[in-house]
Length: 216
Image (cartoon, rainbow, N blue to C red; front, top):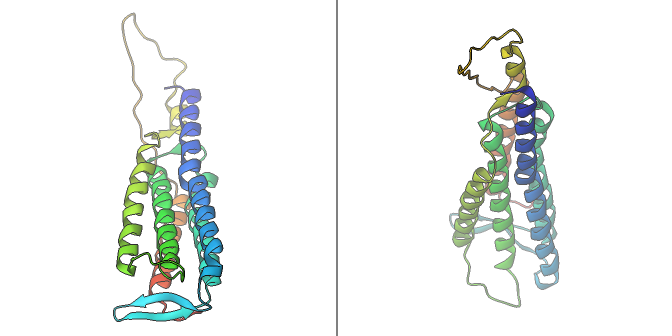
């Protein structure tokens, strides 16, 4: 495959990655934050922000949900996608596709959990939801949107460097002969380091959100 064709495949994959991993989470975050802001007048001055095994054990102002939704809803997708968009310009692989799907799924989880947590505390209506049901819906959204984000992206594994190295201008073919190029694309060390750091920060953030029981 020519370098031009490989470059075109990488560009196509990057566009899909950007839409799934960053644009979609930004749109979901904006919608979720809009719902929470619209419901602020319908909420008490202090609402539950954390549930433990024995029930609510953390309280704060409803505005906290807006800030957490925006900060995490935008921060995590940026953390997962920007290193890839910056570092992976001449090659592409399955890791990039997976990170975009994780970004979309995580964004869906956060939006459902935060919006659901606020909705169940509105004073004018009774949703009948429990925090367990909200979490179940959130993880269901993570799974569904993550799978959708995975399958809508093209399965591209390309490297322009390998294509350039493999190209041979002196290749001579007899009539009827065919050739094929085989190779693999791997993420470089800077990309791997960025990926590991991103996942660690994502895990730490997730633990902070669900385990901190006070209003800090």
